[in-house]
Image: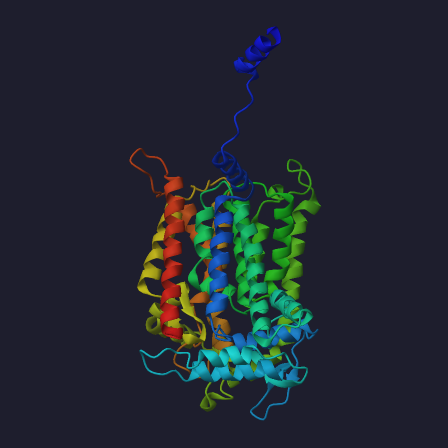
Length: 518
């Protein structure tokens, strides 16, 4: 009885009662908090949203209906098989560059090209026969190859094609069909975008400006390109990475971690050889004070600490110059992308001579281009989806503008001590010069001599410049959004940005599906 009594008292003792099981919701919440602190809310939600919609675009977009996706795939296939330099091919029409691709892939390319070139009138869908894509996509990738033209993408270095090239090699390893290879190539690029941009957003964790970078990263045009085969996927990702690092190291005045420092140096070298128009953006890492890089003593700055970012910039600039010289001959064949009447009219040398000898004429053409096309470029910034030329709906543009308004409005006020006036001006001038390079590059490489506007400019080319351009605005603009109590509504703003961008993407998907597939 005594033992029973003692047992009864022992069980009844409050301090010896077994701990109540932890509610599952509490454990899940703690796990979410740990993930959020480690990676940042914007990075986590970016991977989720961009992963979903990038995958949707990769499946929803008919094969080779992306921006220049036929020639982009051709260059990726060439890189996957060791063809890193431009390869000149025989073409009776004029100078041409390209390479070999499997005959079965060419069959799907040819069908897709004809399908998006010859669209029926509304309300009929653009895709004439979905089953034709299934049939051609189910074919095996043949050993027999044929020569194809891709002068426009032969001009690009192999760097931005490494992820899709890896996708092609994986598809070959597992003996996937033609359609399987196209998807594998698209998904490899998407994964690269998720990893690079996810890291870029992680750089800004703990700061409200992360939502501005998030808004740019999930623009419909950015995710559409991430879900298709294009060199722009890696280019956009590296530009966003450089932007995030410059915002943290220069405008926020914080010291970069070791991985972030390595990423800054690597991006400074790699971005210039991805696309020539963004070479100056890569050079901005030299504006980050040496003490804010994670090497050496931050208090006593050695000469090598100051020299290292400049050395990376020099390597990037030299690599850019070497590749430009290597790819320069391909400019002579760019006119073959235009209608037959324009063949031979795109002459970079003549255009450059015209700019130097009569700059007033170029300025006049530039002004006419803006007067006639600026509204088109504005919509394209949000999305003109591949070679279906489907522009995103008004709801997408409005929702994206709401996300931009909120993400800009709640961003931190950048301290003048972190980024002095001179460095801020240098960032602004670099962004402006990069915009000018877009126009000059297309004037020389795509516009016929004597044409009335600068042809080939598209709004998507300005996406990689958006974060830095808005960062300069934030540096000089004191206005911010606050609630009734004068506090910055950080959580509400984050929810609003995520909701608005999701609505934007859903609306774009619905319109594209309706018009392309019916």
